[in-house]
Image (cartoon, rainbow, N blue to C red; front, side, top):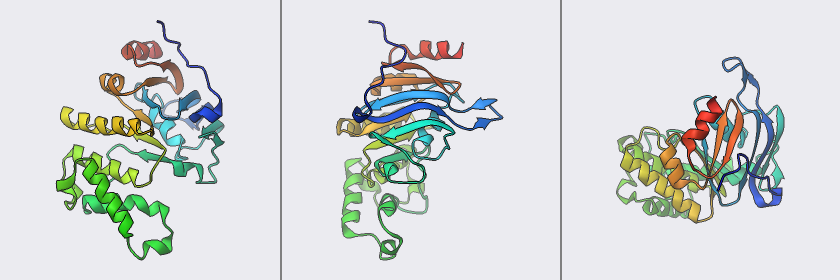
Length: 253
Protein backbone atom coordinates (compact mmCIF):
# COMPACT_ATOMS: atom_id res chain seq x y z
CA UNK A 1 0.00 0.00 0.00
CA UNK A 2 1.38 3.39 -0.95
CA UNK A 3 2.03 5.78 1.93
CA UNK A 4 0.68 9.33 1.84
CA UNK A 5 3.40 11.97 1.73
CA UNK A 6 1.77 14.03 4.46
CA UNK A 7 -0.58 12.51 7.01
CA UNK A 8 -3.99 14.06 7.56
CA UNK A 9 -4.11 16.56 10.42
CA UNK A 10 -6.35 15.41 13.27
CA UNK A 11 -8.38 17.52 15.73
CA UNK A 12 -6.14 19.31 18.22
CA UNK A 13 -7.77 17.54 21.16
CA UNK A 14 -6.35 14.18 19.98
CA UNK A 15 -2.83 15.47 19.48
CA UNK A 16 0.15 15.80 21.78
CA UNK A 17 1.88 18.24 19.41
CA UNK A 18 0.53 20.26 16.50
CA UNK A 19 2.64 22.69 14.47
CA UNK A 20 1.11 24.93 11.84
CA UNK A 21 3.11 26.94 9.31
CA UNK A 22 6.13 27.42 11.61
CA UNK A 23 8.72 29.96 10.52
CA UNK A 24 11.85 30.74 12.52
CA UNK A 25 14.10 33.79 11.99
CA UNK A 26 16.14 34.10 8.80
CA UNK A 27 19.64 32.61 9.02
CA UNK A 28 22.33 34.14 6.83
CA UNK A 29 24.35 30.91 6.87
CA UNK A 30 21.43 28.98 5.35
CA UNK A 31 20.06 31.92 3.32
CA UNK A 32 16.61 30.98 4.61
CA UNK A 33 14.78 30.37 7.90
CA UNK A 34 15.75 27.13 9.66
CA UNK A 35 12.02 26.39 9.82
CA UNK A 36 10.34 27.52 6.63
CA UNK A 37 6.68 26.60 6.88
CA UNK A 38 6.64 23.41 8.96
CA UNK A 39 3.32 21.63 9.39
CA UNK A 40 3.16 18.43 11.45
CA UNK A 41 1.03 16.65 14.01
CA UNK A 42 1.98 14.01 16.57
CA UNK A 43 -0.63 11.98 18.38
CA UNK A 44 -0.46 11.33 22.11
CA UNK A 45 1.50 8.15 22.82
CA UNK A 46 3.29 8.03 19.45
CA UNK A 47 6.97 7.35 18.86
CA UNK A 48 8.01 9.64 15.99
CA UNK A 49 11.45 10.20 14.54
CA UNK A 50 12.65 13.37 12.82
CA UNK A 51 15.12 12.65 10.04
CA UNK A 52 16.86 14.69 7.39
CA UNK A 53 20.21 15.94 6.21
CA UNK A 54 22.32 18.39 8.20
CA UNK A 55 20.64 21.79 8.28
CA UNK A 56 17.22 20.38 7.46
CA UNK A 57 15.69 21.84 10.63
CA UNK A 58 15.30 18.74 12.81
CA UNK A 59 16.92 20.00 16.01
CA UNK A 60 15.52 23.48 15.47
CA UNK A 61 12.00 22.06 15.31
CA UNK A 62 12.61 20.06 18.48
CA UNK A 63 13.91 23.11 20.35
CA UNK A 64 11.08 25.32 19.13
CA UNK A 65 8.62 23.12 21.01
CA UNK A 66 10.11 24.20 24.35
CA UNK A 67 10.67 27.84 23.47
CA UNK A 68 14.41 27.65 22.79
CA UNK A 69 13.94 28.88 19.21
CA UNK A 70 11.80 31.97 18.59
CA UNK A 71 8.91 31.53 16.14
CA UNK A 72 8.19 34.47 13.87
CA UNK A 73 5.10 32.97 12.27
CA UNK A 74 2.81 30.03 12.89
CA UNK A 75 1.45 28.23 15.95
CA UNK A 76 2.39 25.37 18.27
CA UNK A 77 -0.16 23.47 20.34
CA UNK A 78 0.85 21.12 23.16
CA UNK A 79 -1.94 18.78 24.27
CA UNK A 80 -4.49 21.04 22.59
CA UNK A 81 -3.30 24.27 24.23
CA UNK A 82 -1.61 27.02 22.24
CA UNK A 83 1.93 27.56 23.48
CA UNK A 84 2.72 31.03 24.79
CA UNK A 85 6.42 31.70 25.18
CA UNK A 86 5.64 34.07 28.02
CA UNK A 87 4.39 31.16 30.07
CA UNK A 88 6.05 27.94 31.18
CA UNK A 89 2.81 26.09 31.91
CA UNK A 90 2.63 24.04 28.73
CA UNK A 91 6.36 23.37 28.74
CA UNK A 92 6.10 21.65 32.12
CA UNK A 93 4.51 18.73 30.28
CA UNK A 94 7.45 18.50 27.89
CA UNK A 95 11.06 17.54 28.61
CA UNK A 96 13.99 17.62 26.21
CA UNK A 97 17.11 15.47 26.25
CA UNK A 98 19.93 17.24 24.46
CA UNK A 99 22.72 15.56 22.56
CA UNK A 100 25.36 14.51 25.08
CA UNK A 101 22.95 14.52 28.00
CA UNK A 102 24.31 17.66 29.70
CA UNK A 103 25.39 15.90 32.89
CA UNK A 104 27.66 17.46 35.51
CA UNK A 105 30.78 15.21 35.41
CA UNK A 106 31.88 16.05 38.97
CA UNK A 107 28.57 14.78 40.41
CA UNK A 108 27.55 11.18 40.96
CA UNK A 109 24.87 9.51 38.92
CA UNK A 110 22.44 9.91 41.82
CA UNK A 111 23.24 13.59 42.28
CA UNK A 112 22.77 14.26 38.56
CA UNK A 113 19.40 12.54 38.58
CA UNK A 114 18.28 14.47 41.65
CA UNK A 115 19.00 17.70 39.75
CA UNK A 116 16.06 16.75 37.54
CA UNK A 117 13.69 17.60 40.41
CA UNK A 118 14.97 21.16 40.87
CA UNK A 119 12.58 22.67 38.35
CA UNK A 120 9.61 21.46 40.38
CA UNK A 121 10.73 23.21 43.56
CA UNK A 122 10.91 26.84 44.63
CA UNK A 123 14.22 28.55 45.25
CA UNK A 124 13.56 28.46 49.01
CA UNK A 125 12.82 24.71 48.93
CA UNK A 126 16.11 23.96 47.18
CA UNK A 127 18.03 25.48 50.10
CA UNK A 128 16.86 22.67 52.38
CA UNK A 129 18.27 19.92 50.17
CA UNK A 130 16.47 17.13 48.35
CA UNK A 131 13.46 15.45 49.87
CA UNK A 132 13.63 11.80 50.89
CA UNK A 133 10.90 11.01 48.35
CA UNK A 134 13.05 12.56 45.60
CA UNK A 135 16.05 10.44 46.61
CA UNK A 136 13.95 7.27 46.63
CA UNK A 137 12.51 8.11 43.23
CA UNK A 138 15.96 8.81 41.77
CA UNK A 139 17.32 5.54 43.16
CA UNK A 140 14.38 3.64 41.71
CA UNK A 141 14.88 5.17 38.26
CA UNK A 142 18.58 4.33 38.21
CA UNK A 143 17.87 0.76 39.25
CA UNK A 144 15.15 0.38 36.61
CA UNK A 145 17.63 1.55 33.97
CA UNK A 146 20.19 -1.06 35.03
CA UNK A 147 22.57 1.33 36.79
CA UNK A 148 22.60 -0.17 40.30
CA UNK A 149 26.40 -0.42 40.36
CA UNK A 150 26.90 3.14 39.09
CA UNK A 151 24.61 5.02 41.51
CA UNK A 152 27.42 6.57 43.57
CA UNK A 153 30.01 6.87 40.80
CA UNK A 154 30.86 10.22 39.26
CA UNK A 155 29.45 10.42 35.76
CA UNK A 156 32.90 11.32 34.42
CA UNK A 157 33.84 7.69 35.14
CA UNK A 158 30.89 6.15 33.28
CA UNK A 159 30.69 4.91 29.70
CA UNK A 160 28.80 6.86 27.07
CA UNK A 161 25.80 4.55 27.21
CA UNK A 162 25.69 4.69 31.00
CA UNK A 163 25.85 8.50 30.97
CA UNK A 164 22.99 8.65 28.51
CA UNK A 165 20.85 6.42 30.73
CA UNK A 166 21.65 8.66 33.70
CA UNK A 167 20.49 11.62 31.61
CA UNK A 168 17.26 9.80 30.80
CA UNK A 169 16.68 9.09 34.51
CA UNK A 170 17.20 12.78 35.26
CA UNK A 171 14.58 13.72 32.66
CA UNK A 172 12.13 11.18 34.11
CA UNK A 173 12.34 12.93 37.49
CA UNK A 174 10.17 15.59 35.82
CA UNK A 175 7.43 13.02 34.94
CA UNK A 176 7.04 14.32 31.38
CA UNK A 177 4.11 13.40 29.16
CA UNK A 178 6.13 14.28 26.07
CA UNK A 179 9.84 13.50 25.69
CA UNK A 180 11.89 15.25 23.01
CA UNK A 181 15.23 13.61 22.25
CA UNK A 182 18.02 15.13 20.14
CA UNK A 183 20.39 12.54 18.61
CA UNK A 184 20.50 10.27 21.68
CA UNK A 185 22.91 7.66 20.31
CA UNK A 186 25.55 9.82 18.64
CA UNK A 187 29.01 8.48 19.52
CA UNK A 188 27.71 5.29 21.14
CA UNK A 189 28.75 1.78 20.10
CA UNK A 190 26.15 -0.66 18.79
CA UNK A 191 25.45 -2.28 22.17
CA UNK A 192 25.14 1.01 24.05
CA UNK A 193 22.95 2.48 21.29
CA UNK A 194 20.63 -0.53 21.48
CA UNK A 195 20.39 -0.26 25.27
CA UNK A 196 19.49 3.43 25.06
CA UNK A 197 16.91 2.92 22.32
CA UNK A 198 15.38 0.02 24.26
CA UNK A 199 14.82 2.42 27.16
CA UNK A 200 12.92 4.81 24.88
CA UNK A 201 10.91 1.89 23.53
CA UNK A 202 9.95 0.91 27.07
CA UNK A 203 8.96 4.49 27.92
CA UNK A 204 6.84 4.58 24.78
CA UNK A 205 5.03 1.41 25.86
CA UNK A 206 4.31 3.14 29.17
CA UNK A 207 2.43 5.86 27.28
CA UNK A 208 5.01 8.64 26.93
CA UNK A 209 4.97 10.49 23.62
CA UNK A 210 8.49 10.40 22.15
CA UNK A 211 9.89 12.58 19.37
CA UNK A 212 13.50 11.82 18.53
CA UNK A 213 16.01 13.18 16.05
CA UNK A 214 17.90 10.20 14.61
CA UNK A 215 20.56 9.92 11.91
CA UNK A 216 20.68 6.12 11.76
CA UNK A 217 17.80 5.27 9.43
CA UNK A 218 17.86 1.57 10.33
CA UNK A 219 17.44 2.32 14.03
CA UNK A 220 14.75 4.87 13.18
CA UNK A 221 12.81 2.23 11.24
CA UNK A 222 13.26 -0.37 13.99
CA UNK A 223 11.99 1.78 16.85
CA UNK A 224 9.76 4.59 15.60
CA UNK A 225 6.17 4.22 14.46
CA UNK A 226 6.39 7.12 12.06
CA UNK A 227 8.98 9.33 10.41
CA UNK A 228 8.84 13.01 9.60
CA UNK A 229 11.46 13.86 6.97
CA UNK A 230 12.57 17.48 6.76
CA UNK A 231 14.46 19.23 4.02
CA UNK A 232 15.35 22.94 3.85
CA UNK A 233 13.07 23.68 6.78
CA UNK A 234 9.99 21.96 5.38
CA UNK A 235 8.30 18.59 5.85
CA UNK A 236 8.77 16.54 2.67
CA UNK A 237 7.47 13.20 3.99
CA UNK A 238 5.29 12.19 6.92
CA UNK A 239 4.44 8.50 7.18
CA UNK A 240 5.57 5.03 8.13
CA UNK A 241 9.28 4.27 8.44
CA UNK A 242 9.59 2.55 5.10
CA UNK A 243 12.30 3.19 2.52
CA UNK A 244 13.57 6.27 4.35
CA UNK A 245 16.73 6.67 2.21
CA UNK A 246 14.52 7.20 -0.82
CA UNK A 247 12.50 9.89 0.96
CA UNK A 248 15.71 11.65 1.93
CA UNK A 249 16.88 11.55 -1.68
CA UNK A 250 13.59 12.98 -2.92
CA UNK A 251 13.82 15.79 -0.39
CA UNK A 252 17.35 16.58 -1.53
CA UNK A 253 16.55 16.75 -5.20
